[in-house]
Figure 1 (cartoon, one colour):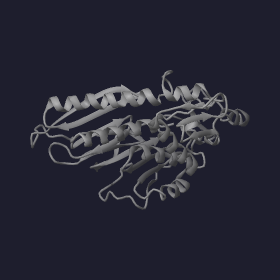
Figure 2 (cartoon, one colour):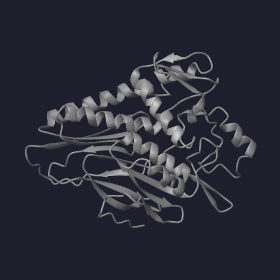
Figure 3 (cartoon, one colour):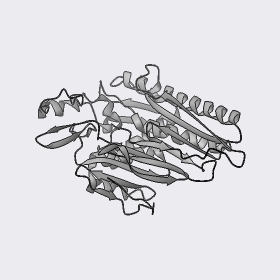
Figure 4 (cartoon, helix red, strand yellow):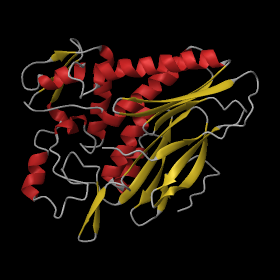
Length: 331
């Protein structure tokens, strides 16, 4: 349900200061690309901490992946309509938070979207919209209200056979947050964990300057919309500039509203800033589905988070609490 728009601009001087070094590594985890940047006192320490980050992401993936048949989430899905499945408290609480998002968005965000039939094609093969009947049928097994949580037993039960839950990019945001917290607890004072565009950042570059995050211009992907400095923060973007279809002059995003089965329309991208990548991802996805007006009303419930919205017709809208003073968008 999410497409990445963010990439990292590491504007690093050729020298280091205060005996700090920056090390970066890229790897494939959780079905996507992770870019890990760690600032430490020496190269050996930095590389060892990157190893620790990768091990932590792998641990989380093995718990919550819905494409690994032996994960706890896969066991929940395999037993839909059959029995509750006991899961680790970590998985239970992540599911609990995801359901809370489903409730506050009235199903615009729904972790049971994994059961949705993929009737929309965004590879150029679609020549007509699916029928209303087909669209309705595609989401008949989607519905967060049919997820039963037992906090005492730490179990998850999907009432309907064929139901599935999946964390998608929400899980990537969760993983980046967990790794940042782990690094801070170990005394690593700076770094960025970037999971397919879900970023958790902390500290500063070795030259003492803030990390600079580049946001891609959705209408000119080879250019930047803006460069935003961040310290200890998170940023995620959801959008549709590469994957969409047009019928009767209307643009339909690859991001599907799980409550209706219809693609999101009206917005080209949403970038959310805040302290937590998991929450920021839930918000960016939800805003794409809900649209500008309802989306901004939702964001008002999360005062620590702000956003930049780009509409299909090229308008740039900032939330009222947008706090980056030097931000200038160039479409």
